[in-house]
Image (cartoon, rainbow, N blue to C red; front, side, top):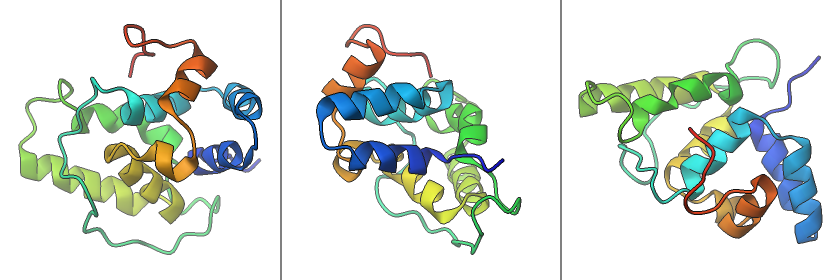
Length: 147
């Protein structure tokens, strides 16, 4: 069975016309991994310890789901390395190299999604708002899902 990617889920949400449809779609595909990616982009308390903008990585040609690449959902547990309060022992150069290596193992759509999340631009790219995400997952400014 082919695994649905986080990019595919967020694209489905983007393509919904109404707020209610978008919320239903987020809830349908609700996983801790999806929540973590959303939180990393929308929660103002999450600070990425990486430069904003393009990342100099070698985008590889992977065929989605052919086993030659990793899925972002399976790599979410490593994102603490790139976020303030996560792995404080990493030097900046090592952290950036690890991020590049992660991007190079992902399908291009998921690598781009991760860069967008890092830059806190998921909302504008996938046409969702922090208000919508909070409503879908019953979050508020004090109670975000733990990353």
